[in-house]
Image 1 (tube, rainbow, N blue to C red):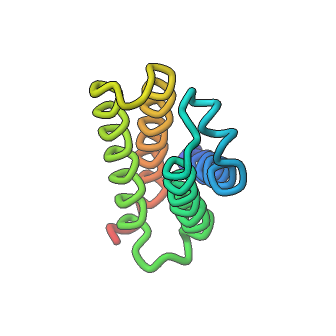
Image 2 (image 1 turned 90 degrees about the vertical axis):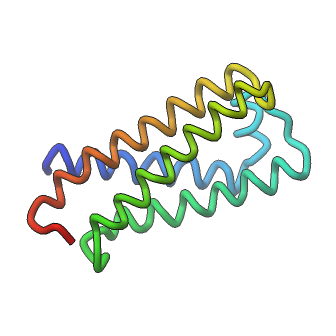
Length: 126
């Protein structure tokens, strides 16, 4: 297995794990980040969860995607927007330092893994 495909598998695994945690145990995920777990936070966690689960499924079936590079671009874009949103929330003291740090590291790691995955699509510029 190539290093690029391994990075995509790691990204898919991380997205699936985050997605399932957010969907099935949103309060536990919120506590791990040092965040409150009120009704709105639970709803947002579940929305985040289904998005990540769907992206994970797409990454695992990337070879069946009509335009794999476009799908990878969407993944990277989402992670970069997530990182920006987390940093902004941290700067505005809407979330704590732990949530800001963990959220930013996770989002930027996802973006880096997605970018690394582009090399696995080197055959064509779809």
